[in-house]
Image (cartoon, rainbow, N blue to C red; front, side, top):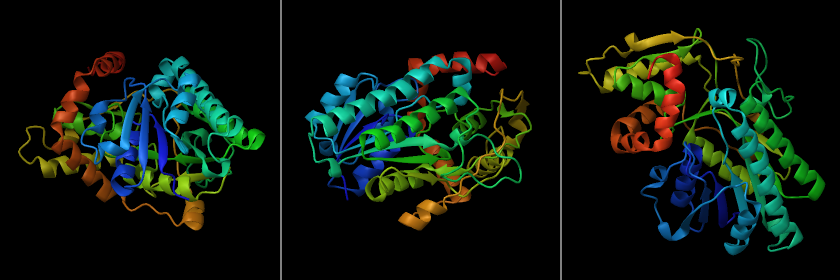
Length: 362
């Protein structure tokens, strides 16, 4: 099945905007309705230069507004919802968890209710021709020890932060709507994404931009936390494949098969910047590294077993960390106008005030 009228929530954010761009570029028969509230990490700057505006519509709206979500689905004949919209940063969830409960849990509930109303109660479209796809995270599984096997789809949930708990709750809601109401759903749990258009709070863009400006490169604890790194375009390809070919009610892990400790990521970025900016006064960029107090309850290790999606759908990531990081650093170097525009947004200034001032790194 190939869905032709797709509503993307959170499509002005990092992964969502990359997904919109990926679908419009590769599937000329698909229309995208992008619904985003444009909070601090969502920006229309991420959507400049889309390949075909005739197949794209943006609506600024809150996913918690169930009536508006249902009306949009009816008005645009939406066949599939791809639900990215979420508060997504662990540090911010520790400082202010209420927004995560509201958006990630209540927002998902609102969308599920809208889909149930339009597709199942009003039967606006044929039920076997619609799909609700939910984007989640590996953080719902908790933390792994050094010798523990990688997370698989049947790993028990054990979230350790308010963010992870809110995403675990939304996963359970999506599954419940499938089993209780027979809503056609699929789910994916992804590892750490990186690539173009990522908001500068995240590790990789933060290290790139700080290093370019000679600022400290803050590394939590000893820097030996391990994550599975997934290039965002690979993630978009996997989501599209699960949406169209995945089994109803099933979840699929998506990872990059790249699991170095964070300190190695920072070192690799520094080496790439030394190569790309040989005349920089901050070279070698590794001298900018600064170890800071670890975050509360920091999960030590994540790793994803992606054998299910490979076995059932034939998907594997195309980028290893070396090629993905190189493309990412090149993109940030080539797009200073995007960086300037993001930094001029009021929400970005507020984020800097709340976060960097605490570490004395503002």
